[in-house]
Image (cartoon, rainbow over all chains, first blue to last red; front, side, top):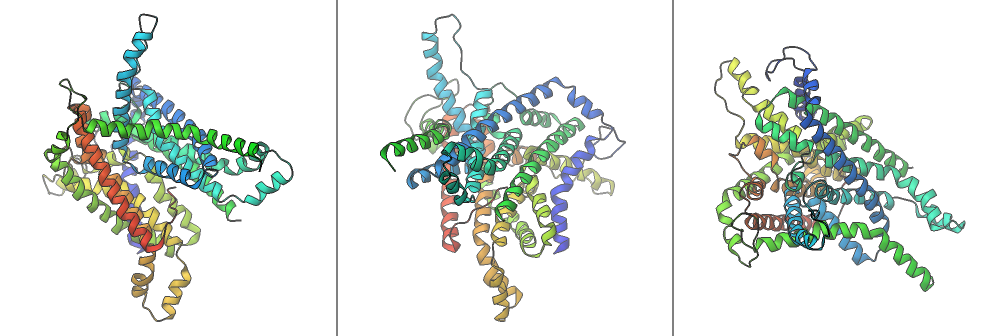
Length: 272
Length: 288
């Protein structure tokens, strides 16, 4: 059994390790390691297309994760005050947002936005006083909207689980001692759910930063890092892609490990 | 509680859920309605959508039968292959592993799930490509082995990409298992094998169902793995959708395929939930 388990872990990590190893290869060849070099990293970071794709990805991930963390937390807090039937509707919609394949989310968002733009843009053109009416189109906004959907569902799920494990007695004690609901929230509830909000934010950020398929449909002319990497891969496998891939891996690794530490703290605390 | 505080409470609740509700309406419900409308429309001559009410797009579905067959055959096979590897791993983590290292071992399974699928699939392109394993094989005299762009490569990519997602729900259901049941079974003279098949396996079925349903559903919409490891030779519904939306711009037909895909997903979910409910009620699954 031990041998089987070890080989599964090897299977999970060896391919990633290989990508990282060959990102430091001096030569171009993918099958022999000819010497240690960080040249490919220099080449990757000197690539202006890549750097602008990275900036786009960071902007989109940060914005969608921030909105998801705020609105998702609000939804998690509000949902438990709802009537059971309304709560069930929210639960079903959030579950749909998580479980529907990304390719369908991408298509549905694309189709809806294009339909809306085809009504709004001519209308804007007629009522606009100047010569150049603004044209709504796909871009940052549409990617943030589509990523925000999944991310909000994710944050709500995580924060809701944390709220469910909160002790009610301390909240009641706080209001018995004449704290206003807002004070109770600020001093009692918020500090306890903050780690799960942060974990949700980090997971949402990771999701958005790594997502390819949704952005592929709704990005319009904008390029995110995964879209750039995908396009490069289709042109051929090079050590430069390994360098970019390694940077992406390190970034998501740091994010997910921080998120897990935050969630773990939650688990040990609730276990007291 | 007075009427005034009640109204205030309702207002606060409404304000809390309003942004998420608006987001869900505008970016989930509305898009699904739009997609449904498009599926009954026609392709405009220059590409895109033209208003109509026709079932022509759905009648056209058989022209993409190959994509449906590939997906509907390889997705369940992939999910099953994941399950066969995932179950022993989840069992080991939940029952056998030293509690001191359990958290680290579980983390090591979760982490790949949250790292870029694109990068993880790329790794296999690298390994299976002509300069990878086939090159090593040619050094020992085995020439002309093609690994990339085969169904086997796609299956390998699927197992690699989705194994963590299969392990987690099974691990959760096994971890919650009441150990006393196992002891009771052994005390009553059951052999370890019959305890496993009589007690452990049935009680972990909700986790198994969750894992199989999640992986199958996500695989039905998979695009990257068949694209990168199947090289256009092994294509899924996801690949047909990208082609229809971004290349040939036949949006109504693409919408009809997407609507059909959602219908398949809903059926799978309903069957999985029915089985899971029947076995042991619902359980919360930690995705993280």
